[in-house]
Image (cartoon, rainbow, N blue to C red; front, top):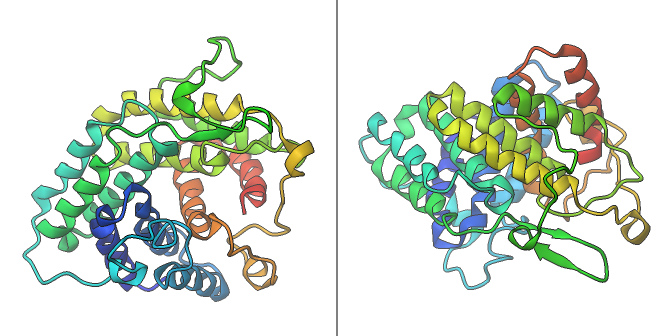
Length: 318
């Protein structure tokens, strides 16, 4: 599977990310998610795990667009985010503090759901491995989540004339065709349907793409699993706002071309040995998070046929 050491290194990176900016949380979150893919699917071809670990190593050595490349004035290099902290006694009771920080900003979509995605991954890691719940780690993660308190919903590209616009500047019709949902089951079915309905000739750009719609929903489902169901109603409403923003983006395929579709799904050795993996885009930190997020989301409902159809369409996000 994926080496256990990546779990603690990912948590360390989350705990230091606030020294850069909120979106530096991408780095630690991806490394944690990469580890959990191995737990989710322990019987994959070894080349899949090798490919995942190669992605994680690339992230740690500074190839992601979300670390020092984005925050050039940071005093920390990407690799330094992952270094161990001085030893402290773990305290499992501190973990609730991450949810308390998230509670303050969960009611609106923040940076394409990254507040929830990052917090949920941290909570899962700490709940399942409380030996890592030291004061310095939990405090650092809480500071990171608090950076999202005043964040916008993300931005979308509305074509050459309008350009990029932040979501809080967009007014949507109440009757925009987005499915109405108020719980995890409804949210999950709506998102799986969006994944199934992807077409190469429809290219929407913004709000983290469908990748983040999936990962945002998966993070909410996990909050319920790990004991924070009281956060779910507000989180689901915010997720629907996120989905509405994404669904109402214009199709810019005429301007930017069709969506690139991978020949293989990412849990297969063929994907990782094809020689066609993209490393020069934001996909480096989102590939493993989406592998992880899709499985978490699919587990939230008993819809095997829908899950199978949606899984085949993961190729559109890889």
